[in-house]
Each structure stands twice: as structure tokens, then as C-alpha cells.
Amino acid sequence: MGEDTKTKVKESQEEGRQEMWRSIEIVGSVEKWALTVVVGDELNFIPPLNFAMVDNGVFRSGFPHSANFSFLQTLNLRSIIYLCPEPYPEANTEFLKSNEIRLFQFGIEGYK
Image (cartoon, rainbow, N blue to C red; front, side, top):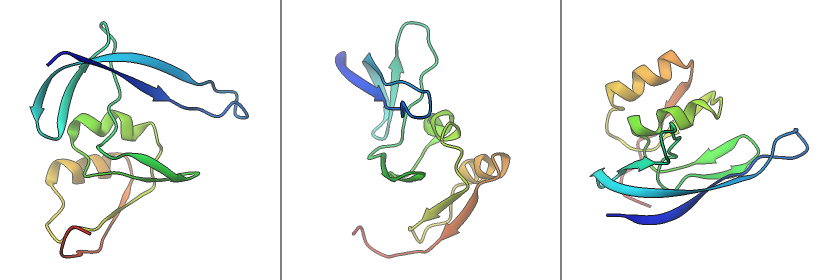
């Protein structure tokens, strides 16, 4: 692969933050859900697939993986609602414990 794309970190000017655009290059995929992203030599924060803000402090996304943990730490999450019936993976559980994030699981069968 070698396609260019843009990533946007949108931050509120009322809170003294600014908006930033950055071009990134996708250099390969680890699995279908995770991408290796390189911007020079910088550490990059990779949001989970389908990540979006629903309301102030409320977010939604696809299932997070270890490549997303640095990004998730920046959100100062307090809780995660997990809608799948399968057990939550141990690596993710450890991430939640170390960041004092509560997990609420409501196992819903199906995809929608």
C-alpha cells in the first residue's frame, strides 16, 4: 500500500485548543482492522474504526485493539459499553483496569 489520506484532530477553540490537519501515509496493514501509520518519526494516535463523537464526552466506535489504546487514553474515558456477547479480551480488560475505565457488557446477538 502507499496511499495518502488526511487525519484531523478537532479541538475546541473555546477551551484554548486548536484544529490541526495532518497528512499520513498508510504503509501496510497488520490485520484487516489495524493499520500501521507513519508520519515522519512521530508517535501517532490511531482511533478505532468508525470512531466518532456522538455528543460532548460521548463517543462510539468499532471494537478497539491495542493499536488504539494510546488514542483512547487521550479521551479520559470513564466507561465503555460493550454490546457483544463474547467475553471481553484480556488485553483490553487490562487496559481498562490500568486506566480506571468501567466496562458495561450487554450481549446483543446479531450485527445491527
